[in-house]
Length: 421
Ligand SMILES: *Cc1c(COP(=O)(O)O)cnc(C)c1O
Image (cartoon, rainbow, N blue to C red):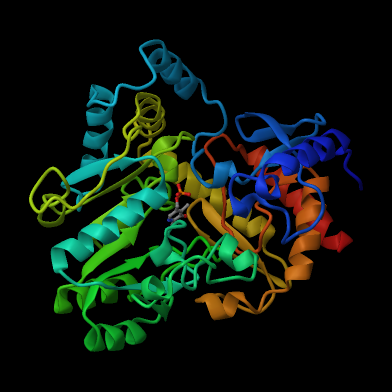
């Protein structure tokens, strides 16, 4: 099967002349799978269309945010209303307060929340608050977890850092990297040992790892992090940029029954516009500038009315039924994708198809995958009209716009793709 991508090829060459790698975010590059990327022109519901006119069932969903699919009518009209009233004020609006109220209601561990423009800004700020309030400098993260591209997190980072085979980025000062300790995901004993030996400001974790492929927390792992944090006065940051509002109405904290001191959010909370947020217990958040000890944080466009309107329109209608539906569609896709030689790991509507190497509990397991087979599968799926993240180390997402027929079409493409490898 072949795919006509001549207009995409021209568009991509043009992009490469003026943008590094032709992309605005490294994870989008097709390096790990090879071949030319389709250049996307539009999306509607569960589908995207490229500049050559090819249509794909989309499982990227803008890397998570589009839980209601592309160009949903509610979101388009909320954006229309907001845009006609002005795109930015740099002052508090009721749109912001309304979304903040929704966050506080759905995430019981969050007393106060602040909006940012990205998940990276949220995690950066959360770590600064943890350091400011505890008076400690060292942080602990997990190998293969991605918390955005700020310096303290580019140590054994997931996502594009993994795909490019370059876990530690040039440009991160050694002095900064030295303050970031890492432990294997799902290894609570390692964490207990490190917490006893070091004065940790925070433990930051993706409650479901999503940036080395989808890895659920082992039973008891998140509870152990909560216990260790309490024992040592460590701030537990749950990075819910993917999981928040995605794997349950109240995110991973609702789904797994753990609670964070600080929570970082992004992706789904903006419904496709650039939004992040961090929030948590009053004893931490009451030190964010202009309050308390005034931990610095700000942003010209933070809480932007368009972003707040899109986020609210996305999240407000999501109740139990929506999550039941995502669970059902996710389960149907997982069952259909299961095959000899591949493992499907899923939590709700986020999942990854791993090629070989047995079940994945941590980064080391993931690095045993057959990357070449993944790359060939990725291209075979694209040729069969399924758009997936171009890396073995990413999760993909089912949205409420997918129908049973869409899921079955993806499964049929998968069977055919596997047979062709
Ligand atoms: C995507 C992601 C981030 C970074 O969010 P950006 O909006 O890309 O800056 C942080 N943490 C996790 C878990 C993510 O998946």
